[in-house]
Image 1 (tube, helix red, strand yellow):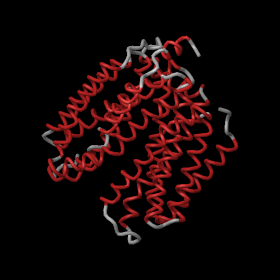
Image 2 (cartoon, helix red, strand yellow; image 1 turned 30 degrees about the vertical axis):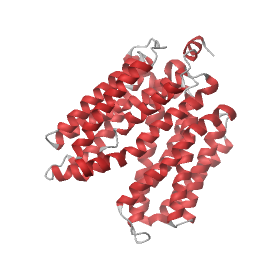
Image 3 (cartoon, one colour; image 1 turned 180 degrees about the vertical axis):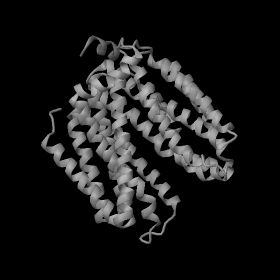
Image 4 (cartoon, one colour; image 1 turned 90 degrees about the vertical axis):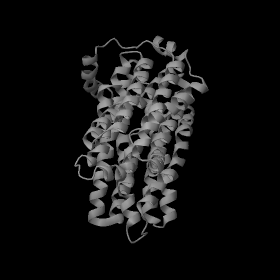
Length: 393
């Protein structure tokens, strides 16, 4: 362990701090998905605007911008100040969304909400920096569990609030939540000096150099990108499959699968502890194996029960691999953890976009059987390659 790692390790986070960071990461990530279930209600208020369809993509685009432009700052400045600032600005952005007089202004607010929601990806490497090496997987897993809860339950909360009180009420509800989170983070997070002395422009330029010089990062990023592509493929066509004559179910049923998938959140802390004890490479392989098994189940067990059990297995696989891959990359260069996270998360988003697009195309051409066959083939190839090239932990 380096001297800088030892200094950080002396601040091994307490259970209360880990819990606070997990909740805060989930609160930040949730903001990206509030507008999705409310889009129909928002469109009804602005029926003549062409901008309503751009609201969810604007939030995702803002998050991508935040990943590239804001997350690297965590290597260069006090992470506590950066996280607190982002939560404060998030509150302002949410208030502007609640007050938006037009869909165009709501698009601009959504872009800012997405950018500042990247605070979630500031918290995860911060937790890794504070953890002892032997406990890093458990700590990252706990924080990721909170982040995933935010992702999964945000749509359910927003749909309920918007249906009963209007879409603006959801944004107003989120404003004090963000400012309260900022206060908690300001009070609980330790102040740790940055480990890098790079300037901001040099840090951005270093992303390409890091990618070229770190084969372990490339491997982790590419594996997780493929696994997340298989994850996104399922969610991209689930509503279409449920609405087909095979089931004849509505879009609300597809939303309930998000709650079913929440069981997979349990995989994050379990995978983290297993990675600490047996090494992350084993858990990554198991995550890929579970992802392949889920798609095989979707293809062979076509009843609704097969979908329910399969989505639980899928979430367990994806989250196990995610936490363990993060365990690997955060151990590489402490002074560049945020930049490593930038590359890792960007790779995942690219994989997810490719997987969603491919799944929709396969659905239109060959239906559910084509989607399951293609995804199963990709999962099998990934598992085979990982087995043949598996490094030592």
